[in-house]
Image (cartoon, rainbow, N blue to C red; front, top):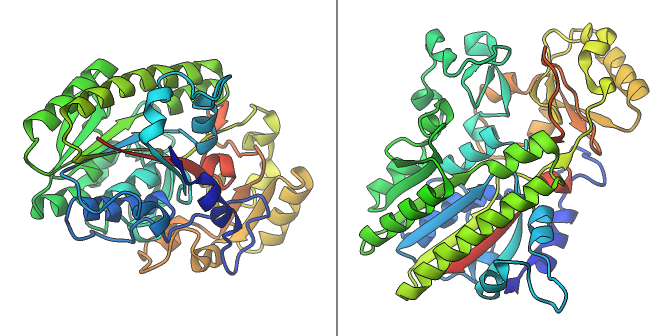
Length: 430
């Protein structure tokens, strides 16, 4: 295996944003070459299409993978942090990689990438389908204040954030998922340049609002199980062997288990082992065909970290703090957007410092935007309304919980720690 982690990781760790202090242990997104934001332009280059937006991966990675392929398969494993990947593929006694990875790793390239800010699915997947960072595409997190609809929206379910069991309810307010983004999406762009795009999605979300927002003019292939996924993917590659295709695979089980049980629970490792066995079988069958024209990539939208369920992080226990805010926080539990009542700024800062010393940083939102926390380039005007007045950046495994329901999550993401921000990029040519 060509392991670039030791070569690239020091550069990611030393990267800082000018004008905002995220703390010594924080990891800023590396939008210029070593972030998941650089994958869409790279995919276009590998498939012989001009970039839709953004920059390609840095030369340390791109120079190792050639220039053109007929097929690119991008497997997005929701919640697979670099630390988790390294743990579950670590060498056993005798120096042999664990399980299925004994045969997978020798021919692979491994590099670290950063996620984006916030390190969360709704924003990250939008970046992967637009090539743009959040500052340009406007999906700023899981929950976002949409001034144009006068509500905080759940950006995965496309419903009011406080509505339980509602999916797609924003349509009743005139929201159109397909027309929401201010940036073009990848599907029509690839089609226009002779590349057929496919997206393999769990059947339960294949036609969801978020999928509809991303997958315009994409062949959506719903799957109901792992066997369904692998057979469908292999058949498309076989039947379109002489064409150019982009095959995006989204798999959510690691994230689901990590939220429920914590990312270090044995269920997470076991699920990854099951996936690895199926991946090995799939790649072995492709290798037997001997075409060598398919680039298979494995990466993630973010990592995860363990977050204990503690009453101190539940904002219903802090009425004095809530009195400082004009609306409940939005964004992420670990990177929250705060809308502060005029004159309450100092009071809010003092309360946070006294109640949770060393556990949160409060950053002026405009300053963080200027520094490039959510990316640079032409900022979408609505972004300034969507990030509030201040950003609450969690340190360690702290978070805020403000929903009017029981807190069930033992694993979280969205923040800027290495566990959340660092993801693997594994590349194999078959």
